[in-house]
Image (cartoon, rainbow, N blue to C red; front, side, top):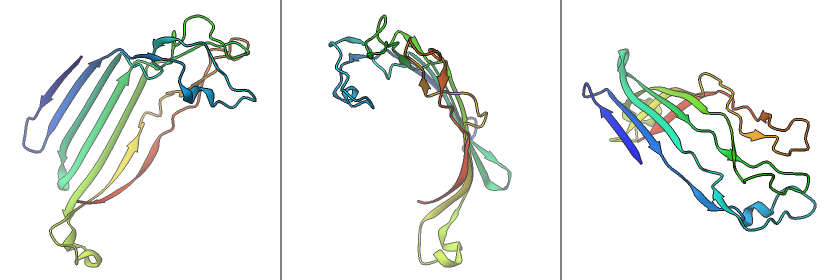
Length: 178
């Protein structure tokens, strides 16, 4: 189920808010799961359950806002339920129901600020006619929040249940020709 609200107060400004509720179930004995970094392949009994990509609740907010000097701000907020994972033993057998545990909620704030201009106005690109260019900066995960992408899921590990693999803030430049 998805519910979306789109608001456009001016010709150059707009805001979109989307809430998505979903359920993903699948066969958990996929061929890709056999190729893990172990000496012997891990082949589990066939199980049907919550998919490893299941995100039941997600809120996405995007916008485009005009700023002074003909700049454009494009923020994106993404908040969603953490991905599921399975507890396993030393032999990689499921302990309890597969994918019964979840990562913490995910939160990310991204933005891009850019300015568009006619490509023909740039001296070394003057041969390109009728195109616009976009030059700007972007930042992904502005808050640098701890959004882990890995977990110690082996119940025999002293680190069992601890999350790892921090997401990192990424900043950069954008140059596009349209």
